[in-house]
Length: 280
Image (cartoon, rainbow, N blue to C red; front, side, top):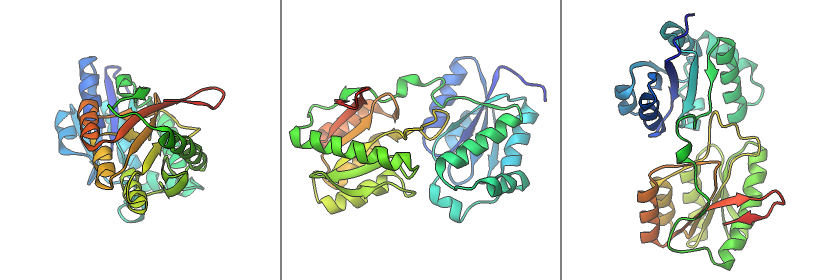
């Protein structure tokens, strides 16, 4: 394969993250080749790319061939794939099926690391997803007019410990708590569904805590929040969204903060110190 250094690949899932990356990469003078997933990737991503290959989930061989044909030697994973799709809409080709059968634990980290390893064996380096977008990392401190009160601070600290624990097990990255009780733990259904479930049990004043996994790989699956997260929390009369600063993505910051202020929701970026204490 002849590699064209000016080209960069994107393996795109859902949402706006791939589109933001394309704009930033082009501004840096790169030519962008996108692998788009049917039923996940928005059409705007394909339209913004210089070249696009549409695939179904599991078509690893098709991805590799596309990148080889285009001379792509670097790529990024951007955007989520609906996790429940692995039970119904996977159409693996021979390479995809062979890799799938080699993975002992069908969890996020194991699957993504296996795919990344397979790509790098084909001379396609996987870069950090924030390669051109470090400015999208969640900032530290309180972003909204309201600040967490003492009761909410205790819930954040309690939720933090529990979110770290489920992350260590590669289960999820988010918990919903109230009065230092865990109401919902994120699993395969995703953050918004977890907020709806936990917020329904809380009835009101739910505190959502979202952190990175202890072994988080910046190449893929960073936690992300945005306007939809706040709207979901507002729909269950939730009170707080606490996110690990510098270790997750924040989309549409101004719009999201404005919506949180209107709903009376606290949004805060939390930093964990070396001694385990938290800074708000």
